[in-house]
Length: 144
Image (cartoon, rainbow, N blue to C red; front, top):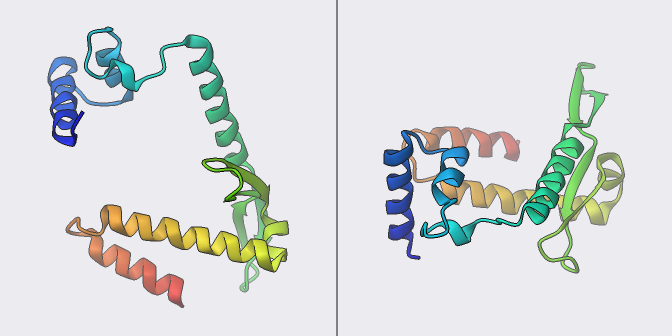
């Protein structure tokens, strides 16, 4: 399906369901003759496993550590960070933030990954009017 066809299907979903969101899109794609049906996992057992994995990621992301910044103010940071390793494509392994930042090689890997994600963000949103100033402010802050 081309990008234009996908856009048309999403607009059709919005028209038929009154809104476009995850719930209405799943409802729209449920009939087997829906052009979007095959983009979804319909095996309940497999979908349940994928959802539990999503819940696990959310749980890991919810855990924070508290530290004091340079002005002795309490700050929060993720207790675990997800690191992509080349020997496990598509998978991220979670490691203690403190351990990652204490190890030069893993810290560099995390920083390189953060730069890739920032570049992807800029590519995705950089052309939107009004965000260019926000992006420039963010980049200036990171460079400081």
